[in-house]
Image (cartoon, rainbow, N blue to C red):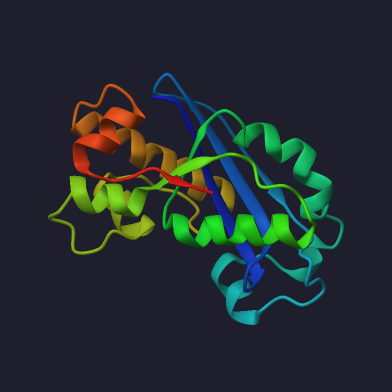
Length: 182
């Protein structure tokens, strides 16, 4: 059970202002890290986004750009499967950031814990990160990328444990959730 959970917070549209990554190896969380990102739209920050995650223009004023961080971020994504809660959003942000800086897309497969949650815990009325974490009594600082990535990893692990999956491929196959390509 090896994968990397990813989460982005955005300044506006697909411009990331924070990324969180959590590594899972052999079914255990081994490392979590987050980075503030000076967004390509700096100094503009959508006020609604700021209200959601609390990250301000001042917070990112001395942060590195995504391009400057890519050398450190890329190894987290190589030779692993990515997972995100509402993966369509996070993969769109990742693709957009890579395209903006003309960086090559890594060869990555990914899956979504919203889809996994819908298959494993059908009784839940909502499969938002907050609702699924509340169902599992997980407390965290929601809408901060590091915490959200770690909780996403926990949810994936709990789902695969619930269905007694041997590994990610076995788990996804059992519930009919496909791996997608970045």
